[in-house]
Length: 418
Figure 1: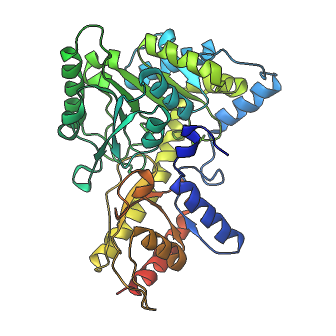
Figure 2: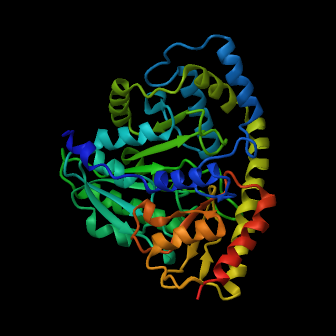
């Protein structure tokens, strides 16, 4: 049966495929150290109690009807205040849009800005930019980021492609790498965008930046989060922010996200989402509006939450460094932010004890899953090359007491390779 070109050409998710394999192994009784999902185990990382209570209270007060298409006024006022107090950014209410998490907002950014054939610049590995570009029939301008730049794109890598491009998709802290933009690197990209937009004739489509900062509260040590508008105020008219409670409050299933940016673009995004109906639920909106105003509760929650996430990231990072120092072909990048650790399993070409050669990275992934019971997501699932040896390891479901036994299993599996 013939369907639309879009549905016929959609690319299947490697993460979903891997997740299915893991679920089947667990169903059959296998013990799996599952570090694949960019989500949280609520038993390990529950949402803030004040937010939970506010959600329950909102339902009991029968806030179960349609919310406003742009997001309830009280929530947008709360987001406005929260954004000012935490980032020093001032956006008016018509410049703020609420939806059911970040995904519909990202989709609406692509739809509002990009026409068929428009150039969309994004780095790989990155989360879903390839799919959103496909949705709008855009031209993929793919920047292959490397370990030398902590897998973040640079202005020099982007510069050759900015002419006639419509959108640059940026994310910091980045999914899947857990790395961040350094101040000078983001400034250079901003300067490039400003210069390009000055070059374009009046009436021409401008070059916009979608800035996904979903994880921006979750930085560790001396790492600081930077955004385009704070660094270069001129970027205000070209930047659309994506944010949410999903990651910062371990509330992926609560589904409240927001975008802020130029009023004209936000209005078009609202119009698109009005037809899709991707509103955040009324009760959750009421609860988040109340919770964002509780700065003391937020500070208390984040202090504990960040400490627990960072401890897991650092312990696992140190474990990979220890394996590397023992001579195994593994590595890791020191944790900076988010809930992710970038690890390297450079095992393609090695041979198992039964004489089977690991021909490619897919076979490496399968070997680590089957022999070490370790499930991580290869960077090729995020648009990188098929033989890229780097992986995303997510600690949102990690129990600290399992870290040691996971490394024992991993080292045993590595020791059996020649």
